[in-house]
Image (cartoon, rainbow, N blue to C red; front, side, top):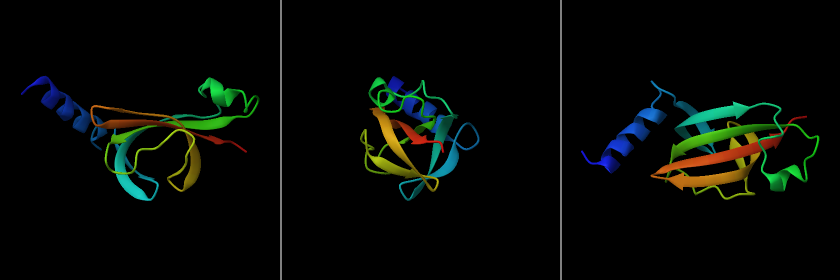
Length: 107
């Protein structure tokens, strides 16, 4: 097994429901992913968004899921996650795993 094959095996274990993965719905597609949450945390927003949202609290989530399940989420797009709407504040693709940071205002 070469390095890339070992990395793919590790990623599969990372998203596995017996490890860190849970089933969620992202833009209408049910999939296994790893989710990290930050409630009422305005410091996690990018500098671009902080300028517009001073003193506004947000719920932020970092999502990790396999590429190809949904169209790549672009920064600034509105997305649906588990029935709630969020905005994409960052997204990246690394070795077949998509990392997306989303935010929504807390009312």
